Image (cartoon, rainbow, N blue to C red; front, side, top):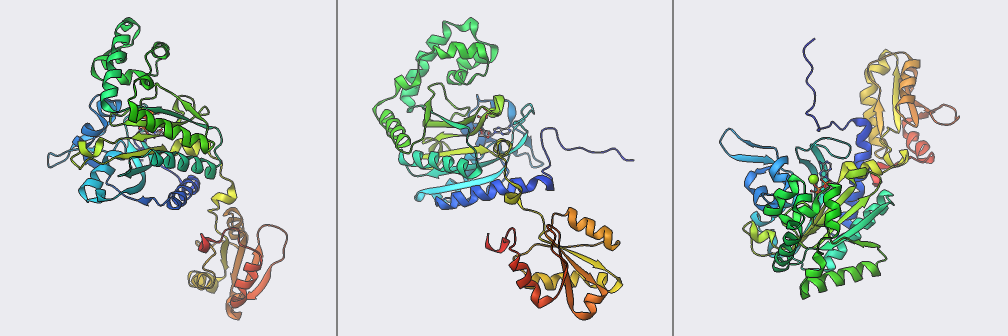
Amino acid sequence: MAEQIRAVRGMHDILPSDTGRWQWLEDRARALLARYGYREIRMPLVEPTGLFRRSIGEVTDIVEKEMYSFEDRGGEHLSLRPEGTASCVRAAIEHGLLSQPQRLWYLGPMFRRERPQRGRYRQFHQIGVEVFGLTGPDIDLEQILLTRRLWEALGLTDLHLELNSLGDLPERMRYREALVAYLETHREALDDDSQRRLSTNPLRVLDSKNPAVQELIAAAPSLLDYLGTEARAHFNTLCRGLERAGLEVRINPRLVRGLDYYNRTVFEWITDALGAQGTVCAGGRYDGLVEQLGGRATPAIGFAMGLERLLELSSPTPEEIADAPDLYLVAVGEQAEAQAVLFAEQVREQLPGWRLLCHSGGGSFKSQFKKADRSGARFALVLGDDELASGRISVKPLRGQADQQTLALAELSSYLNAQQPSTDIAST
Ligand code: ATP
Ligand code: MG
């Protein structure tokens, strides 16, 4: 046998047995985003590498270590997108979307060459949300409340919100000096990564996952003490809004996020159930990024959530996933088998809200019935040569004890509807 080729490490097939769960999650998120008036945008998976260097920042894990970058046959420097914000900003500028406020979302795969482990993959999926043209803090509040409502819709109860403000640039610069001065006095306690960041991007030291460094950070100066009047007012108003909405918040002055473009509000939704990969949703304000990427200065805020991590926390019921057929057409006899596909079309005409799987590949009555049962369908439709000759169809409920009935095709609809379909896909 020829050598087998396997999927790239850290990149996973999502099999039919799992896609029901994915669709369940995606459908709920889509419906919720529509309820808030957000509209979908779809960007390419590949962008000029410079886009990510300029937005995410040169001295970040993503740009330094994680991007899939390559030169294409025409010599262009391209990268698989590691996140969606930069692409979304690029698209919004390029197509002149920013002359008025925009509430946008996107869904799709992102690519980062990280060490694969539970909750961390090289191709993973995000739903991202970006709002342009609104200075907040009411829009900051709206986004956080939207995410809370999504957790509700997904039945997730053990997530908590961490919140911080990074202030505005001059404030962050003053804080940076104070942080560097503090860390310099403890330089010997920093690991190599943190020592390097100390000179290139000191705020990122706060991001360190090393316990020894974290201990040091706990006693470092707090960003929140450095906020100017406006940034502080923005933060306080947001906190008040969250409080009035009954949302419990953990203020975390060390929360800085791993990308360079954030200012003011930053937040993360975290669970304790996924170990080190506990952040399921993260975002913040990035008022400077549009201008930095060549657009007119436009305030912006967004967040992204990791779908693999959300799915790991979710337990949709079989009814909620419901991707089994409702009906399974069994055809026995030479004539019936030959007519089955066309007959199934007639049934689909009559029953647009029902999912019908038409058996193919022949086999005995018994073996077809076994397959019907295994498909999860609620009813078997039996087409034999007798039925064909009389223009009728037999129906056998596969769940419960009800008897088989033989009906005219025109009666099928009212018979089945009286049995209440488990999911009426025509109405969803
Ligand atoms: P982490 O600290 O876990 O590396 P991050 O700060 O790099 O996360 P973001 O860039 O903010 O993550 O992406 C937002 C969300 O996307 C994360 O909270 C997480 O749920 C998800 N995510 C990020 N990287 C991965 C990955 N490699 N595999 C799976 N999900 C991921
Ligand atoms: Mg990361």
